Amino acid sequence: MSYNLLKGKKGIIFGALDEKSIAWRTALRCHEEGAQLVLTNAPVALRMGEINKLAEIVKAPVIGADVTNMDDLKKLLEASVDHFGGKIDFILHSVGMSLNLRKGKAYTELDYGFTQKTLDISSLSLHRVLRAAWDLDALNEWGSVVALTYIAAQRVFPDYSEMADAKALLESVARSFGYHYALRRKVRVNTVSQSPTRTTAGGGVKGFDGFISYAEKMSPLGNATADECADYCVTLFSDMTRMVTMQNLFHDGGFSSSGVTQGVIDQMEK
Ligand SMILES: NC(=O)c1ccc[n+]([C@@H]2O[C@H](COP(=O)([O-])OP(=O)(O)OC[C@H]3O[C@@H](n4cnc5c(N)ncnc54)[C@H](O)[C@@H]3O)[C@@H](O)[C@H]2O)c1
Image 1 (tube, rainbow, N blue to C red):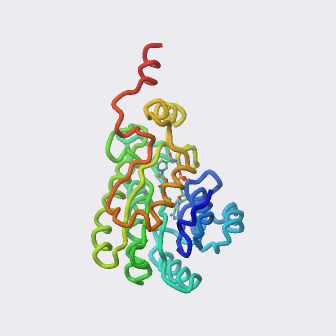
Image 2: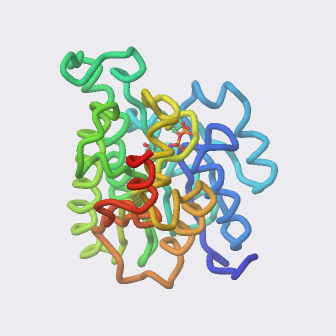
Image 3: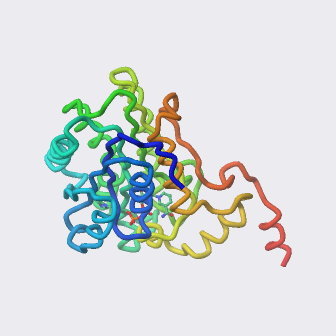
């Protein structure tokens, strides 16, 4: 069902890799709600070609940008403003990658060169995106920027490894830049802390199946799906949430506030 919540709004969606991606689901919902979009991903991801299917559906151009490269981001923002014929109203940062997880390195054996790259891609990239927008003054007043995060930033989930540190930094960047952007343009910046979700990035975490079923049992509403996350992002891009900024917002079916649930107790008593 569409409510036209984003009618007339223009947004950039980072990170749609395939149809399971949270960014892919969000692009579909934003389109249904009346937004005009630009899609972007790393050049290496674009070579897979999947994103062109999404681009056709949501009638958006695809512009490559590596989030670790400031020139790429500047060009992306300039090209987007050109395409829209005006400034941008919202940005979804749905980007994450851990080199140590990929290479199977445990948290106690991190390769710090890999860690720097992980932080650059997964956390500082939000600063870079906001900085590029700031320098070009590319966001409209009451614009909205959302980045996706995970509760491992607050509590230990051992196999999430260095991504926990990356998410803690990401959430801090959202708060700090959110302060400055609120004063300058009333732009809001928030992170959405999503339930574990079956995607390419999610599946990269060791023991993900056990992880996802545990979270399902520990959440009174169950795990939030990618489509439900997309719905939530739409509300944050809309004018209905104008005074929400510098927040880490849990979108997790109640997981973050549950100490234990009947589902977990039943499992332990088996
Ligand atoms: N899947 C989960 O369980 C889960 C839970 C909470 C938060 N998140 C977060 O949601 C976000 C989206 O992940 P997803 O689960 O949809 O997985 P995904 O693998 O579909 O998306 C990750 C995206 O990051 C992009 N990316 C990686 N390096 C890049 C670079 N250098 N430049 C530009 N883009 C780059 C990838 O191409 C990909 O499109 C991530 O920040 C992830 O940490 C995921």
